[in-house]
Image 1 (cartoon, rainbow, N blue to C red):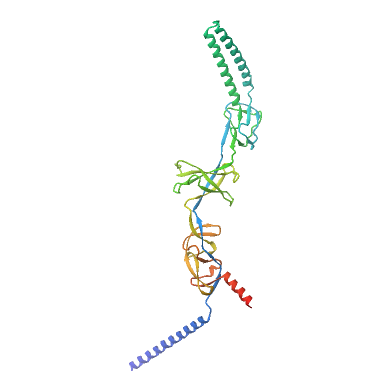
Image 2 (image 1 turned 60 degrees about the horizontal axis):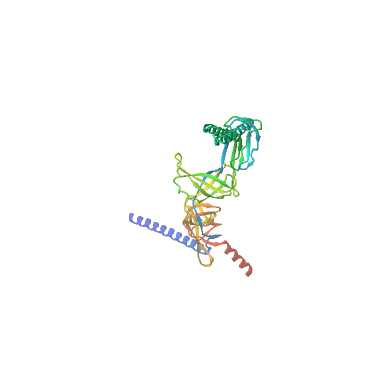
Length: 369
């Protein structure tokens, strides 16, 4: 009796399992038939070919414009200003008189010194004539000759004092802003005028840490003024012979024509400096690069029959950005076709049509009708 019950249970279970398996199989066959009737999913995108471009890694550091020549002009002697020929902000030429102090006392002493020299010279001449006839001793002639030399020295001292009270421009320069006025009294060793040299080129000084490769003389860097997008090429004209003991930086001086970029001394600029050798790398539009949890990648399009392609995901290593393109250090090579606009719709293995080809096909159908 128990055996009969167990047999009945086993038969019922076997029938149930067989029925479920048959039902699942029929559902799978129906799904496969429906999938076979539906067209394969595809997407239309634009595509570009990977191109090669020259690439060199750069860094941006701060630089400072230096004056070609700079001088703070001081007066050695005290005196009252009697002449002023240096307007604030004006350009003066080399040798131009800038400022003259009152030297009337020196002028009077100079007249007296010249008169004394003339008298001493006449005495010397008479003594020399008398010496020829033995009418005067050798000592008298020597004394007269010494008096002439002393008079000449006195004239030189007075003339030097007058020159020191007349300040001239040592080079062509722009005058700094000042508050000097005619009649103003200046103490000796006062800071009188600030002169900034004028030249046909501009100097920019900047520093690089010691762990970057040393630049060569005549190497090219790019100068970018603050708050401007434009850049200007400048050449290295001087390199400091030693590193800074405090910062371990090496100082450079770059030069460019003032006609190209004229900036005032002490202006801060950005200096774009190459820190590696130039090399050739692949370049792709930034729009073609996908960035997600998988990393950075692009879709390479592999050609199939009838003008279609298959999307293949390829991881890439990115370099610097230049405009709307990004340097690819690893992953793709020049000449490969990659998806650009519309690539966000793709997944690996998906059928792809190019937008240009799709447009041509539509135009052909319209003309055929």
